[in-house]
Length: 104
Image (cartoon, rainbow, N blue to C red; front, side, top):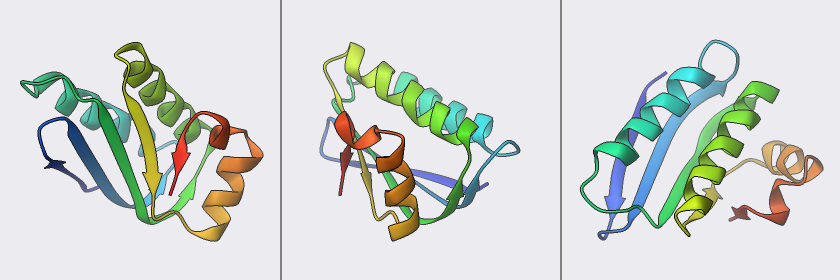
């Protein structure tokens, strides 16, 4: 899985990937993003997961997103998911992520 990390301003990180977040890719996805957060000099206050090219997310992928949310929440940060397809948005809402993660 190819994951690109970019920044918007000082405190906002954007993580974009393509394909599926499943059993084979979820650990790499989460680790890459967590490492980027740790390596950055400033505290990330907003993490945006760009799902515009994500076609599927499994339960382990949802768990990784939840772990990222918890890490940001502990630092008074915000997690946002942007560009998710209708099907992915429906899945995220079905599991209740829309109650604590901003879906754009």
